[in-house]
Length: 275
Image (cartoon, rainbow, N blue to C red; front, side, top):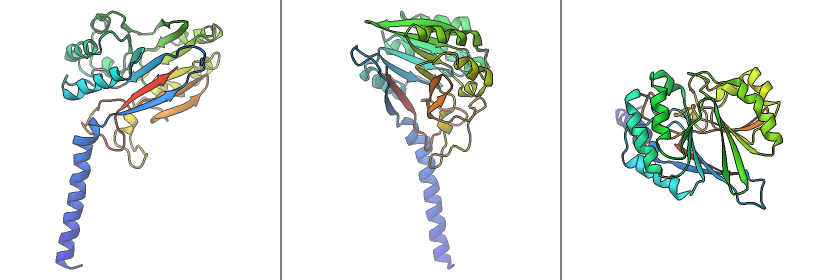
């Protein structure tokens, strides 16, 4: 190989690497994808639109966060669920409060993720921040009935599997709720929870309409759909739909980033469910 050809190949490789890095750090983190999922079985009644936001990892309230809020509002959801890792440090509570206020009067339900635990966050303050907005609720091993017209959604929110202590006894109620013909949605930040044999046994006693998780970031860095790394607590899940015992599970790629401020092959996501 001649010197000129080696120089050309070297420059080509350098430019390609810079292009990939530029995309990962500056372009893809802002390319939010809205995914729509129609799961309505009540064609004779008005549906309920649920929007899932996961893994916000709020670092600021800037142009990106304002755009995210506007996109959510344009979807006209009946409720928004935050499936964990809203913030990853204790002093970021004011950012979460500002984000919730920007969402306005849309009812919002949240469960904690591993970072809310790992950051030594005061959960009394977390609840006060979230529930300071009327209609908002922190479901820390809790349940809430959301009603629109003749439709009711039973929301079950569990503490995070990776960093917290989910109450498995709540799963024993799923069969009863299903028998009451309610739409049941289970929120759990870390999808590895659904790899546990005891969880699958309890889930099999009833049926949830939908289970929602996040945590994985879709790998955050993925190559042709392959995620070489997912965090502890992901189990065998990466992103999208999975059929598990007693539920259809959806694992969101989330919105924010962790460890490194980059995404590649795993765009941030707003997930929309028509129920």
